[in-house]
Image (cartoon, rainbow, N blue to C red; front, side):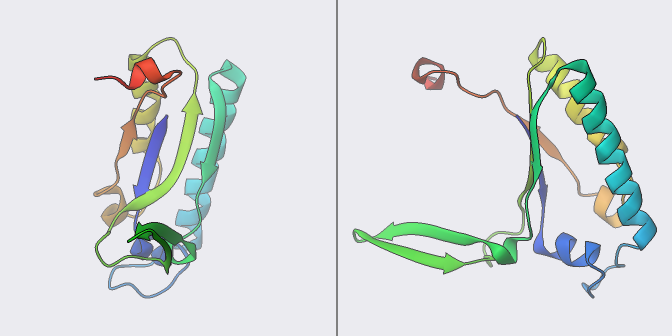
Length: 135
């Protein structure tokens, strides 16, 4: 699984809202969309793409936790969390190295310089069984 991250500030900038940093232009957003569509199509055609999704802004998030045996629901974003999961790709490919190569291509995604400078992705194998969760 390839995981990408962002912040509420990133989502606000993409929407053209004031964030203290330059907002994305329409051209920036279109270029990112075109890059993602192209990458996804290539992965689909190679048979490596299982699923991909973008996630909506953190302000539309609810966190559930248990406090003293009682479920508590809070709305996002959370002051203690700057980065949130922004999207993911599930790929089925020949190796962990190949998944890493795919994730590295995300560094080519067009974005404003201040966004690209802090962008990163994680590559994590998906456990197929409980035995794979053992350390």
